[in-house]
Length: 215
Ligand code: SF4
Image (cartoon, rainbow, N blue to C red; front, top):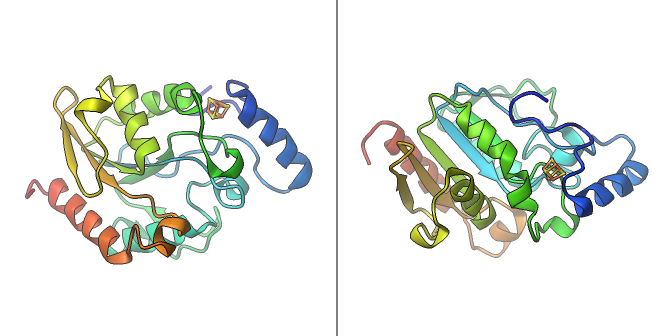
């Protein structure tokens, strides 16, 4: 096992393993295994989503790739200079992240896109390794409460001291990093207006200010 990377047949979450087996039969061309993070461990920014989408990252083996959430996330990252190349919903599209790494709190696709029980806690060992391996890490952008709580848990902070709220910056003193919250860029959140493009744009503007020490 290499750093932050579970075995392809990781069996730690029985429900997700069962779903993986079903999908291997139903979608034999899909990746159908824990999804690899995207971007360098040298990055200063780590973006943490919830879990792979069935027809997105679970198919392509790249977080947020080939699903709606990536269609929102990646163009905005490129707009702010955190990516180059053309995002084309494929792992081999040549799209590259700059100073950013993207991962998920849970590496395997969950049924109905819902993480339950101890799944995030169980998969947290990989997130913990990933964060520990990022020597230049300054900012973690959590997309949604599952990833927010997962980050706090693996770093040893109490969730009651750092409540999730869109656009809020949490300074994590023992680690010298900040945790910035955003609603997830999911189709549901965009369609219902919970998150707009303008709101997400403002979050990335804030991220830039934090990175430059101006916020
Ligand atoms: S979600 Fe994480 S811990 Fe659970 S089976 Fe997948 S890789 Fe293993």
